[in-house]
Amino acid sequence: MQVEIAKLTHDELSTFMESGSITLGSNTFSADDIKVSLEYAGDLGERDAMVLEDGAGVVLLSKKPDASMLAEATAREVCAKVQKLRKDAGLQKSDEVECGFACSEHLTKLILAHSEYISGRIGKPLLPVGKLPSLAVPLLPVSKAKVAVHAIGESGVESTDESIHLSLCRGCAFFNDAKLSALCDPSTAEGVVSYVHGKDFSRLKSDLAASKGTLSLRMNGVALSLKQGEHIFLSSADAISGGAITLS
Image: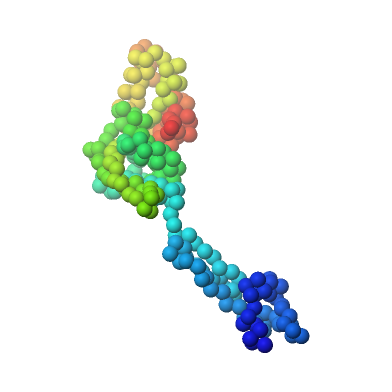
């Protein structure tokens, strides 16, 4: 009977594993009588195989990278460059900063496509440098670094180094330019922006908290009330959420 069992085909064994019994001649065998050991016999060059406990099946894991995996690897390297910059500046995790970048169009598109992933890893949105307030205060000189950009080519994974410039700035206010322009003329708006950026950031936050989100001031003889979440924002994340900044 062992000979007959050894000659069972793949389909017969599959049926046995599903039903838990098989009849050979006049004998019926259960899972207690026949133990089936699974083994992956395919190519392991581009995949890993793992046999589940009790022979319940085989899990195959592809080791061949796709375009999305390679793009995420590049995004992860960008995050590492930002974190190194924070370390170079001697920052603590709780320190409020803003970070901008400038690089090639291709790398920019990749970074923006992974903006949520990057923001989650570095704790802040990574902004195109043109989205940073012009009066933001740099903590360090602009940093130039190399980032490996990976792509799938004819011969497999190909990598090229691209330059990226990173700007690390103190935490600062952001404005909704359209809403501010509707509130006052351009000259007054420019004065308001300068005034707000000239205030100590911690004091600005305290003032807004004490006044329930309204900053009242007089500029060029005009009395103005700036509302947090409408005209003024205390972080790039809030400005993006409030529609004052778009990352496209």
